[in-house]
Image 1 (cartoon, helix red, strand yellow):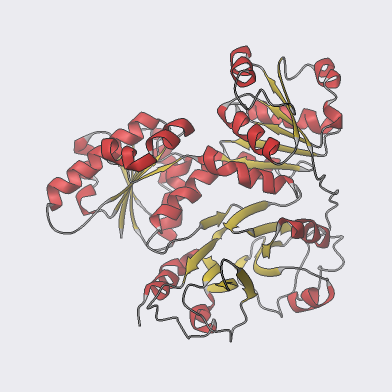
Image 2: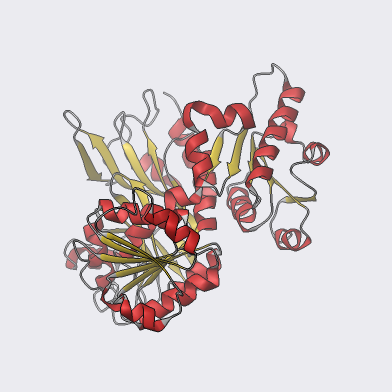
Length: 474
């Protein structure tokens, strides 16, 4: 599969690296010399050019591609590039029956929500899929704040989760124990499906794999109530999460408004503090801002007297959603110092997000990391489901897939998909009577049935083979 990516920034490079690890033929286009220099470390074809210029897309041979991804930082350029790529492809391929999937990274959530209705965005831009991180990251951030000691929490849908945590030296029930011993002795411990060890890479472990301090474990789990059990087993202290938390949000941005509404819907009380008077007034005058459980204020976010007056320390959660990464980090640290137990923040830079997660009970979500995941999910849509790269276990993918009617896997055991050690099936979600669903642990001898929804962990190098197995027909 040939994939052309316009934009060699962090998002474009992240997508290119993952796809190249899967064995895809990848081309990156950018005219920024710094981005191009960074991209040279990847085993992909790098072209200096502009993805919104016909001649540069022709040089990238977009006519031969199956997927075109526009991942620059500018919405209008991404939409234009998708339209040009589709036009060039259709001119070259005519009625050949071939098709080009186009994916655009979009920052403006309102544009995506309004224009994707009834296929309008595709009609006037030639864009099949618009990826907006802000729409998706609210749920990831809220889930992560329920267990801020986690390295990462990712949704696989239907209250199924990937939960990644580092094992501390004091975790007596895990350190120097095998996975089999840990699962047998720790009541209700979810199953571990990936283990990353410094300087040793990532493995899909078995029951005899021994756990050491510093290991990063990826769990497959059902229900957010299990998060606290996981982090405590790994040696982290985790306070009880309140049923109706008091939440402080720094920034009355679009994302701040989205977060405020989500928490209010959950029964929380919300305080929004904005450095922008205009944004504060807009939120206060909106339907969200008129609720009885929300206060919207304008002020200096670094003013300690104001923060004390607002009783910031009595809030259970603080979340920083300003436009500047360093401002968000400063606000989160200030909130922690004033006594807030859980601090969340949204950053652009994924490396900064990884670093910040090591500061107390602070949970950070990277917009760029969410964008990478969302783009990859669309690239892999021939096998419908979710697709997540784990940030600190980068050679592992968490994904879901459905056993379609006529699949060659129907009637076959789980071991038939897991052969070769590239993949482990964590759970099987099976339909029951009516609308009921049951999640089953996927023992190696359990047999697949039609319409089973699988929760999988797959090494990047095995994604293509696993997808091929899932698509085979009997």
